[in-house]
Amino acid sequence: MSTTKLFVGNLPFSTTEEEVRALFQEIGEVQSVNLINDRETGRPRGFGFVELSTEVAQVALREFDGMEFNGRTLRVNEARERERRERPFRGGDRGDRGDRGGDRGHRRY
Image 1 (cartoon, rainbow, N blue to C red):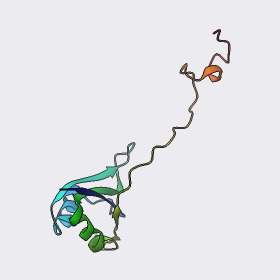
Image 2: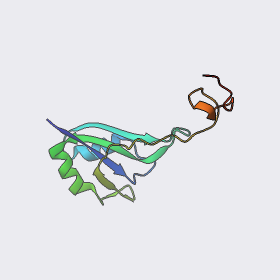
Image 3: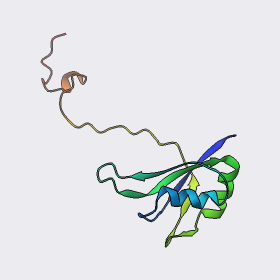
Image 4: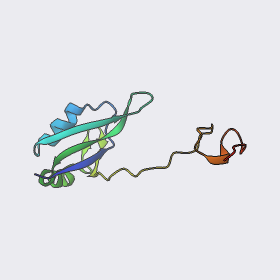
């Protein structure tokens, strides 16, 4: 059985994984629910991911996108693979930047 991961956005910050699971189980079996929290504060960010069988996911997209849920209008769509981002240069010499490092090009090769 193939599965599809759905992005679920615009969730109320008080929403629990159990509430999201219960909502999606109205349509079919839920493989997993993952609500995202802020790394620094630990508080909910108002979105998450639900993994369902592909057939159930297609029904969930039609039923739940735009639906009112605890006072908010849900956004539900198929999750996309996260794009890898370059990390910005934060300074310091880690020895892997040639003459841009802390010793300013005084290396002998």
